[in-house]
Amino acid sequence: MQKNPDPTLPDITDIKERLALEFRTSRHASESHSFSLLPPEFASRGLPKGGLVEICGSPGGGKTQTLARFMAEHPALKVAWVESELTAYPLAFLDQGVGLDRILFVECSPASGCNSRNSSRNPSGTQLLWVLHQILASQVFGVLVCGLQTELVASDLELRRLQLAAEKSGVCVVFLKEYVRVGQPHGTWPITVQLEVSRDGADGMPKITVLRHRGRACQLSKSSAF
Image 1 (cartoon, rainbow, N blue to C red):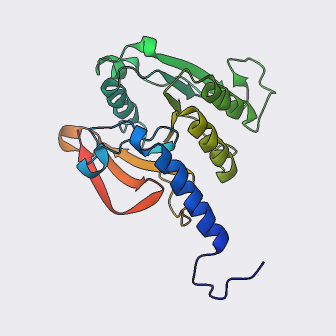
Image 2 (image 1 turned 30 degrees about the horizontal axis):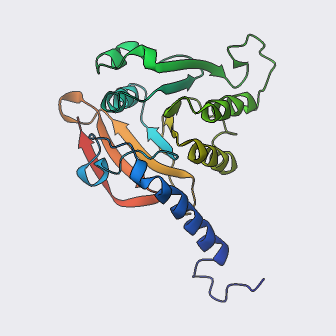
């Protein structure tokens, strides 16, 4: 293979990966779930079907409330919610008019597996990956929320595998995190949309800041308080 004569220019492999990612994300661009709480320039593009979304924020920062509002805007969506411990506050959904019968809550520990008392199983998080892929393959749910990320699940390789599975099933996969991952220079990072939620809005309500959309970092953060 011929080497790149100018190291300041992108490598051909990187260009191919960028084009492939752009193609995959654009396939579902017309099928995205709109979300009115995003800033106007992002609201219609919303959260992508068949893509990975990361919502970051401190505990109690409004991540659950944000998703409950999203669900309220899309009453036909069924949601699978996976956590190590079920910390989602039910009233946050009911306050937004979201019935709990639309949500399948799955308690899953990377050390003990899902709904299992055997603490010796799957310390690497492979059980969690299995559960996520099974939910995607079922094609029953429009949204998969994962409030648990092991080092294995957070790796680029596993994220790409999840992205491909999400694309195939048309499911929006949402990861909840307590901190913002920064320093992702490559355009092929599998996370399509990255949002930060905080309690800095008016009257103590959450505020959404768009950090990344459609695979590209936003040069200027855009915010929307609700």
